[in-house]
Length: 152
Image 1 (tube, rainbow, N blue to C red):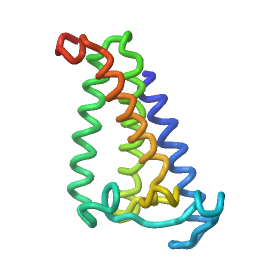
Image 2 (cartoon, one colour):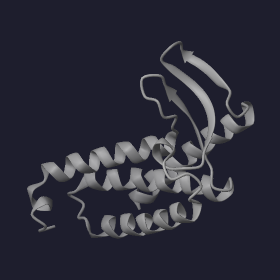
Image 3 (cartoon, helix red, strand yellow):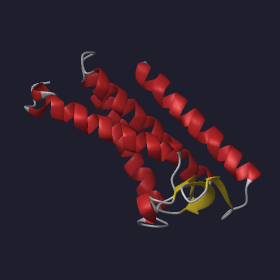
Image 4 (cartoon, rainbow, N blue to C red):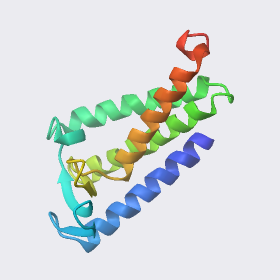
């Protein structure tokens, strides 16, 4: 149940921020939050991270569906003592669903708007949840000898 609560919170926050951006800004518009460091920049991304594989909507929807099924399955087989892995999977699920909603509702595009000048790609809340979830997952997996050996 915790999986769906965390994932739903990510999806809701992601979709609210994207709604605000699309309602209050024009595509390509940029607003400085911290000059020369952080901007809110509204872009429509037809690809994956860094704009890779643009206009491959069917591929992204299919991959996301497989990933969602895998996350739910893996979450269910993990025991409660794998708290950090379960949190990581919930973050990844929320991020995947948040971007999937965009791809389906916006004709293959994802709304991106977080723009750090030190990090060239513009991204969104769902992307952040995915990256943080993957990072937590890798650290938790690496730190758990039971998981690395395949016994859990």
